[in-house]
Image 1: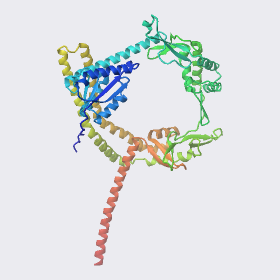
Image 2: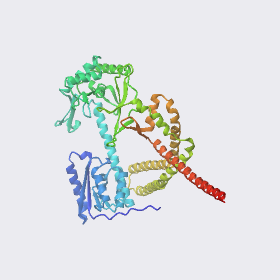
Image 3: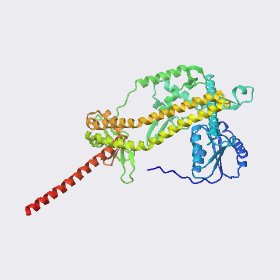
Image 4: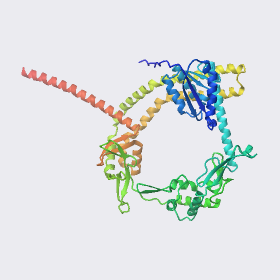
Length: 559
């Protein structure tokens, strides 16, 4: 069946203005936007009789893909709200050349013209003009990357000189002031440094004192701080109480005990600064010896941790309760009452703060039988493979020619672009630096497209290989499951099962499989249904034949 082409209604005549303020101009976006409006009005709007329909603005980096104003512009364009788009220059439309050029082509399909104020006569759809715009995008992206390298270089240099480039940890404050001395030429317009927080600094000195005694666990330290009314600087308590349960913030405390900043050292993996090489310009909470002693205590506890015995929950994170009134599912958690008993207590799957408690053994004992029900008969393997192969071929068959054509057209477009650029390079309109940059980019694009073509040709074989592996697992799991240990049984369930739904009596009402097992079960059920239907049809035929034979015999006997 031929594919229908979508017809778009002609857009309403009018201009849409797009303004983008980059992160470097974010301190004064209004001035930047006024300048962009002035240039657009002088170069484009004054030369046109069309009215301005709407204005779309974004204040962020042009490399950010999810720009709210930009996305709203595309949505209105698809609705035919305007016929022209005005932008100050190509870099304002986006520094990602691929994404921007795709958007220009989409706007063109909707009958919408894109114009840039710095080159008002350039048409992005024209082959030669598009080449110049592409070069503009490439140079803008290069400038952005170079700027990022310079910024990172400056930050790393500050770290190597003992400074700090991000928000100071808890116990310290970031301070800045405008430079009004000759040193401003070296330090910039602002001087920034770190000072101790008068309140929190004392808290963290106390924290280290408690650790260095080697008498308190991290949870006990949190309890001690909570009793004295201390909190993190964000206001978060050291002990969170929820549903009458106390949860100490031991993970955050552990990270702080491993942060060399509190010993006065600058450490940065990205800047290649290991511990104890660069001294920071701030007052440390502890000495280097005390910090290393704290690390030794934590390391020893980690190596000699005493694990508490817990009940084994076979369906952990898998079992859900079905509410018959609302139809909602509630995840059940494991709980063992009276676990201090010699027998280990009674294990339940339950909903916290409710009277819903179902013994684990009631639900667990049903799982083996459910696993057997998803068994696939080996005699059906060929039929399942045929059905799966047919479906994959149908799905990939519709998409594959289109994808191959798009990739081949993209390779052809790169070659044409390279030829046009070579002509400009031959007559001296493009420098050697620009040519080398473009040539490298063309090679990268070619390799990417050729890799995609190879991958597309291998998709079908990969799907069939995945099917064979899944068939092997699902055909043997029902036999091996009962012979596996409890840990291995739980591992198998987590690989195959998405959720197990039970009612309030503990009866399993549904077991939802994960892909590809759910898909294989679906195909298996289809094959079984087709075989049963064939048997039914065959019985009907044989029944009709038998009836006819009996009638013939009855007639002959009557005679």
